[in-house]
Image (tube, rainbow, N blue to C red; front, side, top):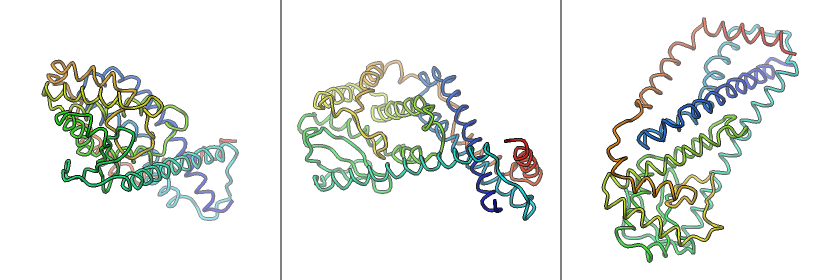
Length: 328
C-alpha cells in the first residue's frame, strides 16, 4: 500500500472512530438534558440542541484535519513499510460511508429546495408587501402553504387559500412566525445539519436529537412572533387551527430534508398550542442556558491554539502507530 493510500485509510479510520464516540456522547447528553430543554427558553434550547447535533461532525473533522494529518505528514517516515489490517480497513470503510451518506443528504436537500422553489415561483406572483426584508409570494396552490424557502435568497410563499381563510391579524402572526425563522437563520441551520457528517443519522442515534431540535425551532419561532403578547398568542393559535383544518391528512407532513421552514407542523400542533395558551407561564420564564455561541467559539479557539502542537502531534502519531501494529 503506497504512502498516500495508507494515509487516506488512516484518516478515514480516525474520522470514523472519533465520529462514533462523539455521536454516542451527543446522544447521551441529549438524553441527560432532555428535561432541561423543556424548561429553558425555546431559543436557548434550539441553540444548544443545534450545537449537540453538529458536535460529532465538527470534532471528527477537527481531529482528522488539525491533528492526525499534520502529525502523519510531519512524523511518518517516507517509504515506511506498513499496511492496514482488516480492522483499519473496516473503520476506513465506515468513515467513507459516513461521508458518502452526508454528501447524499446534502445533495437531496439542495435538490429538494431548488425543485420546490422553482415550482412555487412558476405558480406564484409577488405581493406588494414584504416580510422581514424578503419578498412575499402569493402562491396559487391547493395546499395551505405558509413557508420560507431558501438560504441565500429566501422567499416567503403564502397560498391563496391562506390569504382567503385567515383574518388580517391571523395572517400577520403566521407571517411573523416565518420571519422569526428568518431572523434566527433556521434555514441555514437546516442545511448545516443536512451536511453534518456523523453517525447520529446513519445509526439512528440522531432521531431524538433532531426531533427535539426541530420542535425547539418551532417553539422559538412562536415565541419570537408572539413577543409575550397574549392577544398575538391567541391569533397565532387561531391561525394554526385554521391552517390545520385546511390540510388533508395525507399531506400534513413535509420533506424532512428541505432547506425551508413551514408554518404548520402536524406532529407539533398540539404542543405548540399548549405552549401558546400557557403564555402567562412561559413569558415570565427567566431561566436561560449559558450562552452557547461564546462558549462554543471560545472552546474551538482554545482547541485550535493548544492542540495542533508538536507534543500533541507526537502523541497522536504514537497512538496511531500502536494501533496499526496491534489491530488485526
